[in-house]
Each structure stands twice: as structure tokens, then as C-alpha cells.
Length: 132
Image (cartoon, rainbow, N blue to C red; front, side, top):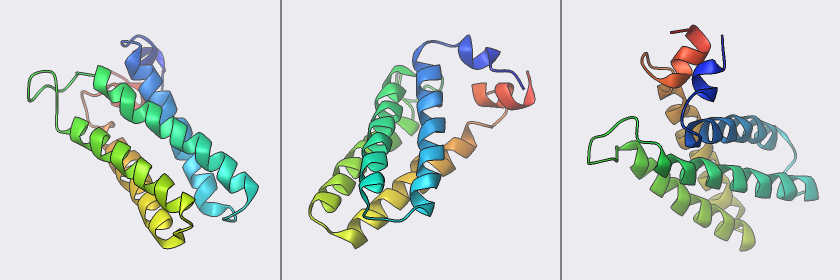
């Protein structure tokens, strides 16, 4: 295991990857911790900011090109941005059910599922974990 492939990549890629890893860890903490507390709200805002970094930084990553410089994964970034706004909206309106479903869906889809695809051979995270 070596971080060299990640650190040698264009600046948007390590920013995106480290923000995603931090959001994943913080997301696990948020899912396990008590809800509705000041700590939950504070960590939730940090998580939202990390997810904004993850989604926005993806627009400067063009390793997979299907439609000009874009790929289908960029649609996930747009969807994540919209869902983040919706999740915050639900929290502000005290719609616990809507907030819970939205945030768990973002975590599962944008971090877990999309994250697993970064370990496909030929991708940078595959090289980080399994070597070149």
C-alpha cells in the first residue's frame, strides 16, 4: 500500500479522495452516535461541507471521459449536491424521517457504492491499495 499514486495525481484527485475518506469515517460516526444532539448537528455540518468538497472537486477530475470531459459519475455529483441541499432542508424543517432517508442514501450511494468503484483495476485507489 502506497499513497504515492494518489499524491502524484492532479491536485483535485487527492483533495477529492481525502475528503471522501474523511466523510466516510465521519459518516460512520454519525450513523452510530445519538441523534439530535449538538454534537450530531456540529458533525453533520462538517460532513455536509466534506461532501460538498467531494462533489464539487469531482468536476475537476476527468479520468473517465464519455461525454467530452464528463462521465456518468458526474451525474452522481450533481445528484449528491441536490440531495445534500434536500437533507439540510429536511433537518432545518425538523423532518427527521426525510433527513434520515436522504443522508443515509447519500452515504450509501455517493460514498460506499461509488467508493467501491474506485478500487477497480486501472483506477488510482486500486494502485494505492493493491499496488500498480
